[in-house]
Image (cartoon, rainbow, N blue to C red; front, side):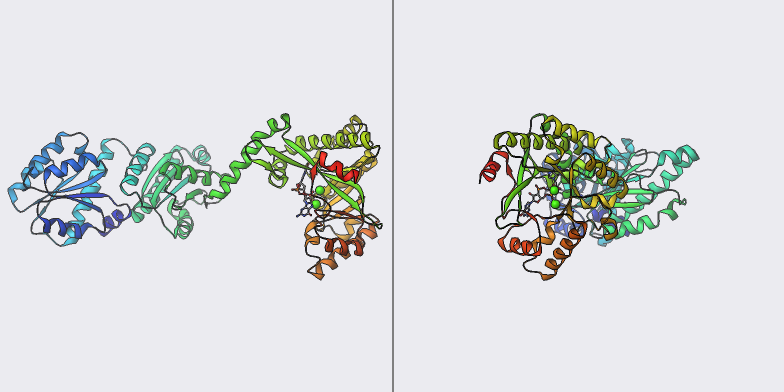
Length: 559
Ligand code: C2E
Ligand code: CA
Ligand code: CA
């Protein structure tokens, strides 16, 4: 009996107490108030009004003798109403004969006055609600035959009804799928598959019995659990998954569990399950039992990434991508001299405004779209160099970023050569920046590719140097033309002598390799001074200029 009470604790069902005597109403309310949401009416007419406006009552406790409309009359009305008939009624009475009559009129049970001990009353109430809920379900064939859990439609219908009744109750949603269940069916037969489903169904019954939640079988190998929020769910699931093998009796069966934890946002039940399902789907392809929690921030990030991917083709066609140029200055002489520029792409997105490459480059690298974007940028950069060449009679070489993904394209050399040629440029007019970590990821392939690019006359700058953990040994065999120090070493050289020392060491390495050193991310005169003193050859950074559109760049050429 305690269990039944426990179960009802989870979701607060609504109970309506109808009695004309104030003291009686209050006594019952005291007994039931912690377990149920109790409302009160002092006669049958009032009660009927309340029942008609609030269709989410789980139980009515009805005194038979009242003014206005007595209990029998109300029972008759309830019995005649298809909707109200579902609500179980417990009759309050002191007379034996009344019991029979009220049962005939459809009452579910009765409580005799004077009242029993509160525990017994609570147990009767709880049982009546449970019977009624179960019989609705059986009546409407709302259960999954195999597991005895609710089916999906009823689960949502019922869950939403309970949510309405318990509108501030925080609820967690859980989706549990059996991994590779079709294989289980194929290998061991449907009958065995059914046994597995049933034992998992049983384990879920057991969970909701403890938590006071609801559960359903939502698909052939899929279950849903809706339960009052549990701060400790992670531990619960930990022990559930640990005991799964024992419960199912087969160590080859594993499940994945996605969870939406209530976050106080009053999301509706379907939304919670959509989120839990997403968390579950991410665990696909796992061979072990595991669970994960829905992460709204992560999900929004993924949606944003998805949107950027979808918008990309159109953006290319509509020239939403803008190439900016940031100057690089040779600082080996007395006055800095503009030697080249780096092309940096920006996306002027119709919805999000200016989007920085930090936001989309890695997304496009993950799905190969970077090929298209980089080709576009290289073309834009090359045509700009040509334009300046025609205008100023002088070539300002531009370095373009070559993504680590581009390296795998055997046509890369051909493509860049074509772009240079098409724009009337020589290979040396385009510098290629390749990040150091690309070298360490796939050393031989990149060495081959870079060698062939150099054979075509292109100059290669190793970008973000100091981050990729190249070994000294490897560095000496790399075909490169310049080292570009990673910004993070430059950032603190004024404050941190160790960082300055690191920069000096990297400059020594460049000397050893006999290539010039470029420092980027240089923002202050102080940084500039230290780098120059340390022997840095070329400086790029806000100290000279931010990346700017081609038009603005003219001022720097003309200066
Ligand atoms: P990166 O190649 O290391 O480019 C340098 C980044 O530092 C640029 O960021 C630049 O705007 C920024 N920067 C320049 N000077 C300063 C400074 O003084 N202080 C600070 N705090 N930052 C400075 P941006 O433009 O946001 O580009 C980020 C990264 O995106 C680039 O890092 C590059 O890896 C990638 N990227 C940009 N354009 C392209 C492209 O067309 N293709 C590919 N594959 N990658 C690109
Ligand atoms: Ca770069
Ligand atoms: Ca860099």
